[in-house]
Length: 142
Image (cartoon, rainbow, N blue to C red):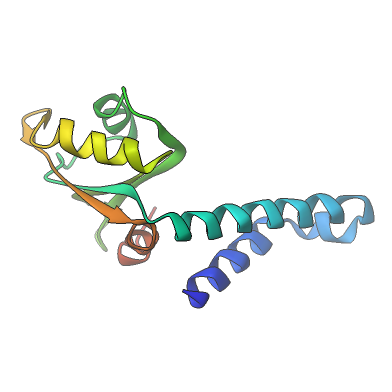
């Protein structure tokens, strides 16, 4: 777990531009952003099941298709991860982070076996750590 937290810290630091750190007036803003993000990450790790893994997606699926599929549920903004293999082709899998555990459970129950295009979709509840590692598993993002 600490390794993942370290990666998150590293990501937050690298997202802040060098200019932000060299200009004294921006340093508190960068530190505040890092603190709020880390608190959010730690809370997500503690909470547990708030994500769903999707299998059986069409290979041309888009984030919009997934958002439409879960339109009546509260998804965390920008929290859809679509798997891409080494050949830059979509794998037919995705991971989605939900606002609450209840939303994730309800979505898994209500949408299991529904279709996107012509494909029957399998849904699995997963922990935040599995959602996070989904991105590492498919580290070939474009």
